Length: 335
Image (cartoon, one colour):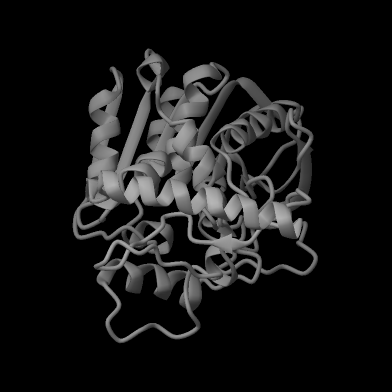
């Protein structure tokens, strides 16, 4: 079996699954870093169905997407888990800057790459987006008809979460304050010549003052942390810490919301039809309403699976809760 040099994956590795370091380019010229997983009993003379996988937003391929890729390779698929442009091991002279357009393009670049492999059937390529990359993968599938079936896990709409706030909690006043904050930040970045890091979902205090930080999560969890912060902290700073993950060890550029304010995701997801979509979320996921909103906008064929008792981050890595058999049957039926 091929082994990764300096393997830093944070999930239980199956030594029977062959995995390779790969690099491929998107149409903007970024070099994307990926891990290519080959099925059990791989035969290079066969033609396999394939799935491209990325997410969560701010994670790396050594975290959740790699676990999904490995598990679906166990079930007979060629898979690739990849780092988004400017993050992880992917290229970008400015690090950790998010873009709805570039991140959507990254899925299509992964389709380019996997479709060039002699052992992949180009007519049987699917895609999965986890968490914030779920909104990007649905957007990618809206235009890229080479994606024959698409699934999301605990889908999170990054445009809505930045513009509207979680549970649509952001006020018009706060939006105006945030626009001014972003404008001021652009002046500071221009004067210094380097971008500052900050929070992509800008929180406000009780006086509508924006709160800023150069890391998404502190080293120690505050005693008064809310349940959602605690959940993310336990994953990114705890059981799945990875030094290259934006969420584990850094933050996005402070002006990241600029793009997401201007260019909303999921504008045309109803056009994915007649290609099938699977939306998976957790019963207790704070993001559940976003998945259900997307599901309601989609046209048939579509399916919504709500995992009983599961929180948002449970579906990142909890093997007893992630419905991998459902993901596998969905892609086997539709690829």
